[in-house]
Amino acid sequence: MSAFIVGLGETVRLRHPPPSQTTATLMRDAVQMALRDAGLSLRDIDGFAVASFSLEPDRAIDIAWQLGLTVRWLLQDTNGGASAINMLGHAIRGIEAGAASNILIVGGDRTSPADFAKRVANYNSATRDHLAPLDYGGPNSLFAMLTKRQMKKYDLVKSDYGHLAIAQRQWAAGNPIAAYRTLLSMDDYLNAPLIADPLCRFDCVPVVAGASAMILSAAPSADAAANSVRVLAIRQSFNHDNQDGDGLETGIHGIAAELWHAAGIAPSEIDVVSVYDDYPAMAYAQLSDLGFIRDGDIAQFARETIATRRLPVNTGGGMLSCGQAGTGSGVHGIAEVARQLQHRGGERQVPGARFGVASGYGMALYRYCACSGAVVLARDEL
Amino acid sequence: MNAAVHGFPVTKCGRCGSLYFPRRLICHRCGNDTWAEDYLREAVTEESTTVQHVAGRTDGTPRHLATVRALQGIRLIVGLEAPLPEGTRVLLFNKDGAPVAKPA
Image: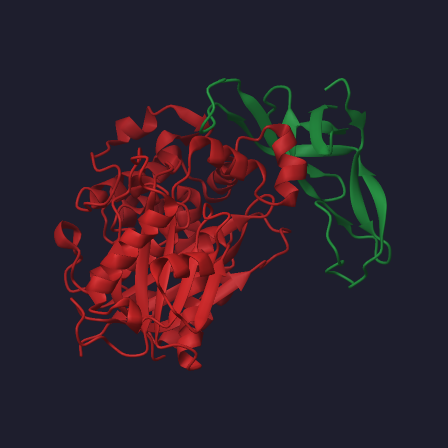
């Protein structure tokens, strides 16, 4: 593949943003950082992709207009936790087809509690018609039940999820944009208030305001602040099982072998991983589907690989510590892997990182999500 | 739950008889697009949860939900009046288009 991530820009995640910060201004700030990082100007950008839950009534073209972008490739994505991977996939193919040469990808949201409640009650027609009348309380209840199912199937205990939340908080301590950076103990985790059993406060991503942007180019940028990151392979999956399954396997399971074959490397060669951690159970599901968990032994993986941070997973802290900035969170996962491969991770840098993988997972149709995908990235040594 | 009606309506493929909930446009098993209505009346609980807190709300009233598997094999998310252990046989009711359940 000939596509490179050449610039990154991310705003600090804010639990209580000032009134002056809107979704659009957060995106603007992330875009300006990404442009500076890439050594490019707005005039160099000829493609634009945006994902957000809170842009209405504006759309991609409105944001392009407000940013002063004139482009020949435009995309608006609505696939939630899989938006970033989806935008990146389309952008790669857009570049390969010659439709554009520098594509700006941005995701972000500022969501009020009232807007959040409205969104979760009207997420799709199935939710509006069959879950909202139950006063289901949003996706926490769905993933609480999936977590229980995973615990039964794989003989997990509550602390197995705690290992992930605690490890990610350790990573977040070195990430200046994370909303939560104070270290977490297992006692803190196990004694936290329940939101929807077995999920406690530290299993549920806090809503924050923020935006993340990245620039994908046909060639490395000579003026960029850091090494470019090469895309080795990307694969995606949509509606993998018609919601007929148990929800513990994501669509990534069906595309992982092809992904690794196309990338030309194996999971054992990966130095840094980002998985979409809307809930710890689904982070483990993605890690398993990607091939990082041997023989489906999530318990051993949680206790020996996550607890020790032997495999660097969600090194920015993930959404569990950064907070969920709506659709900006998926872009953050990819950007964090890219940042590590550029050796710009600061206090949280994984030494000598060369290969990374980032996955996305989103859009709960009824019982679980149906959109997923993953991208394999490499440090470009040119 | 007094207003609820016993039996929960789902769509049934007019050709192969496959049951779906929520409704679909085309039967992914046989490709048919005509539908009949059928009713699920009994199920078994698989997992349940009690929602204690909802972002943006302060009422604090716990909500009890469960994933149940109907005898016909379809999984539904239902409302409960109180938590139920896994494996409990329940009757399904229709309350304003949403399934609710109570012990059989």
